Length: 312
Image 1 (cartoon, helix red, strand yellow):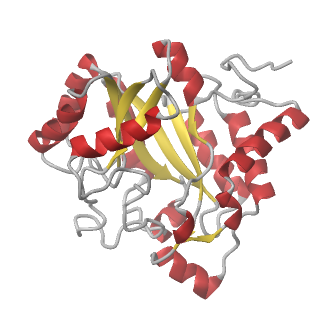
Image 2 (cartoon, helix red, strand yellow):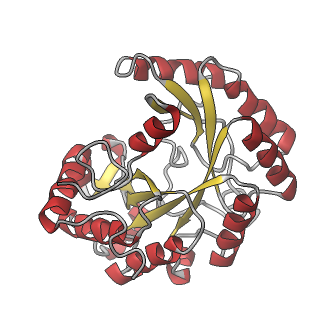
Image 3 (cartoon, rainbow, N blue to C red):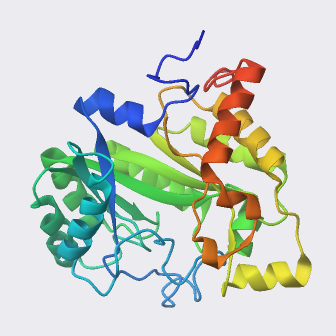
């Protein structure tokens, strides 16, 4: 018998699908968009070149085509998703790069363009903790009163040496303070982390989750590091051949991380989803659903679930 409270399936962790159905009473899916923003660690504001793992699309591999208008991107992806889910509602997901890195008037134009589309019930905005101004916070607070809003903050790791190595160009204090500022305004926060960053140990990855478990966050995205073509990370890997997690190692670490997370924290993602023609390593990421199924099977085998060690 599944002992986990937040589930309507065989999952032993708090899935996004369960959360949306419980909150909105129906299927909801995110429509991924590329609004053409840049990043402060690309243009020289805080650094150059971007994060070493970031592809040319700025982690927006499955977002819309930047050559298209936001409306056309939205319609194209929505219609494709409708082949699978006929009666769903939508959340506009500003995914690629840093989606608060522009003047507030420009943000308003882009966000509200998507909010005006039929059956859009909210926005997810992916950004960096160093790229939300006080004026932007005020606007997000106003937006949060009108629609369902989630801000996704990239952290990746709490280990400062790794953060410098991957060229994040912001501190852990900066991240923590932004979580507090968003929560003061009652805005939901989802945090991105990456397992398998160069030279990190299992203990490092668990420490990141232990730290997040103590913060007032509402969701988390767990990614496996993917080494993709034409990135600084690919060059580092070819030169140094640092250890890449095996599928078995990744599954073990993810399950240990889930055990440490409070059960009410929603798991928005539990593995990476790279473009196959750009992937260098790990090859096992190609079979995403195999990884998800193996996580489920191993959690059953261990008779464990999210949050079992959250309060130890």
